[in-house]
Image 1 (cartoon, rainbow, N blue to C red):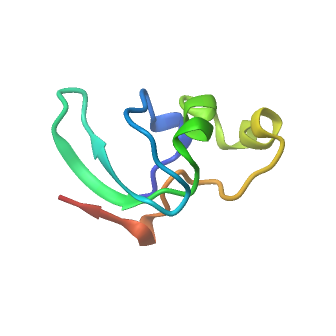
Image 2: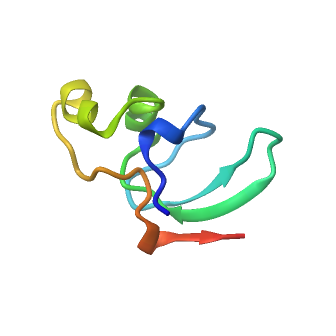
Length: 75
């Protein structure tokens, strides 16, 4: 499935839209890698929020998903 902002708890490091990023579980283990639809600064603002809130928070919306399932691989 896709990674939605509501499923994001924290952001580590800096990245830009389109970068490949790792997704970690609560123990810090890498569980997936994918192409992110928002920068680290944008993700930090929308993490934990519902998809319907993205445009309200950022003033725009590129995508409903932080990482779309077509761009996500489990590792």
